[in-house]
Length: 151
Ligand code: ZN
Image: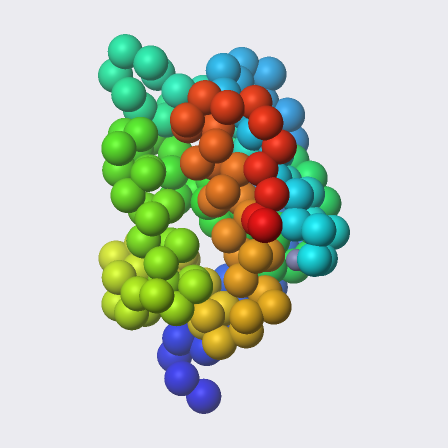
């Protein structure tokens, strides 16, 4: 069993059983909801963006879904808090590229727990579960209030 596979299993189990930063972020000034009709996953990403500095000050998620979608949303909140909007968008692009198999897993090697999701590329049915929260994050950063779907 590869280290990556083991990491994938541990991160998904841990974050799906004990999601971090789940709930309502009252001060949020950006939000977007994602829905994955294939699996029934729903995730709302709520952000406090410092518009002057261009920094994500706080982030929480809410919603219900499968283990992978919950773990992806939970690890997302830990990965983006305190980072610049520009950096967060770059991580979104890398995460999407690796999880869809378009980019090599090494592109997430410096992103801590996010690297665990590289394993999802081997399971095409689960890719939308893993990217749902990230699509919603991207929508929220673009200022949209629309529901993002993974279609
Ligand atoms: Zn799912």
